[in-house]
Length: 292
Image (cartoon, one colour):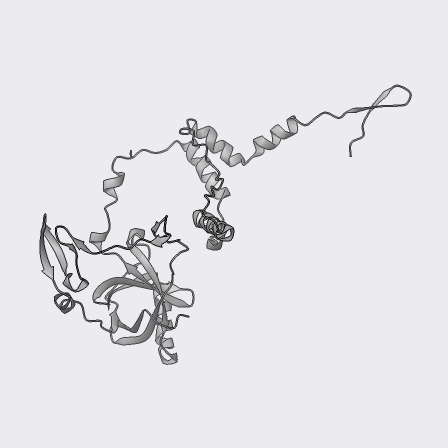
């Protein structure tokens, strides 16, 4: 468990308060960061703060500004910004409950583990967890942290609770604007049956450890090679290229081939197998070679 909690406080449900600690449930992925380097000298590129017509400026001369029109800014200093920040309250009040499947996936942003702060809090914590599980509800509230308010949900997860930071409505695009040109037509029944058969065939338990970012893996291999070679000579890795030859014309044939899963290939291999050779006997006759 991390040494430092993201947030400490209490969940409040009416008159019941549950002391909790909140920890991030995820971490940054294996993304590789690059720096810009001046190749002839091998030195890292640095950037200066400059103002047009003025040139380089000192950091203490820089202030934040909000553009209200082209080239016109409202200037705000740090004290003004700090004055409007929300006080970090130590209470997360659950003000509403909704069905677990009512929150669209687009609103979920980041998960956190919620644990009881001590043994005394565990009983009330367990009651809340099981009540949410039994009713299949999700608790909603707003968490004040680092000067801002986050909309969050609380739901059961195994023996514990998970808090999800949610996006506000103005942070989510309306799906209708992207999907409105798609025809509202029923697909061919045969095609639908083949597609569902293919899905059933490829259905398996979710094992996230089986998936890797192959691009990041390839970058690590490339960096290791160049580091070991102690040379800046270019190394171009061979990559498997997808054919990408146009769109699938016959959807039915493509789905059937996918469902069969290589049966046609195995039949083709069998049909091209060489016939049994004949072995000549000492008497000049011939007899078929016995099959193993």
